[in-house]
View 1: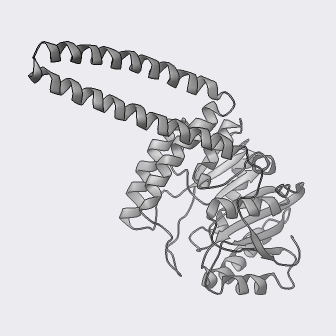
View 2 (view 1 turned 180 degrees about the horizontal axis):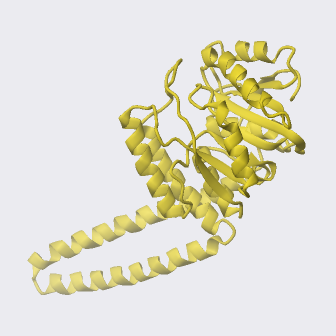
Length: 326
């Protein structure tokens, strides 16, 4: 199935995409804050898009209520939870603004920061990411996040304090060049920078959570590391995979030559009855074999990622929409 094409941007329109899951209590105050913040910007009109990522509470009914009679508000409901990347992708498909914002639905992002993002866009940035310098989160969420962001910056070369901050602003052209699936929402600045877009960062206020509970889980760091390898591979070798696989094949060839040498050495030691020296050699050879098998599995994963990256079907399924998109 061919994905829905992104709509053409309208000058003077801000699109704000809010992905959410089980945030029913936060939605009415969030809408009120967004309307007030954008209302102080007379040169801009508003399109507010709520994407319900499989909520099991009253979130969808609340979205329908907020959208009723207000053409600025648009709602999308998924059939089940597909993840934040899919929710952002669906929101981007519906966005028609020349500037597109994303923010979380838990009230921890402050809509009054919107003018700061617009100033950074006017300064020449194509994507502006928020930096929650003072975070109102527990330590076991803050410190692993800092470590993760440091590793991402080091490996990708995109130097940001907070790659995964949900509060971002984009020129419309950026979201038209991105395709999000899986867990790629954590690496939007990296993906944009790989396309040649200018990425900036501003300090934003981070407020305590008032309602609901955090979706944070320790498993996301393992997934995040694997996704980082995936993103690094796709951005560096997505259009020239032979550079990667060819290098890997050469290294495997050298390893095979080394393995033959080890086999030859072990044979000599065996027939020389020098059995005490044989054991470490066999251990080393076994380790080498395990390394080669692991590398082969990793290469298979990268090949599968290349195929996935070229798929054209939607990474989500929509159950319901409100009447009109802004």
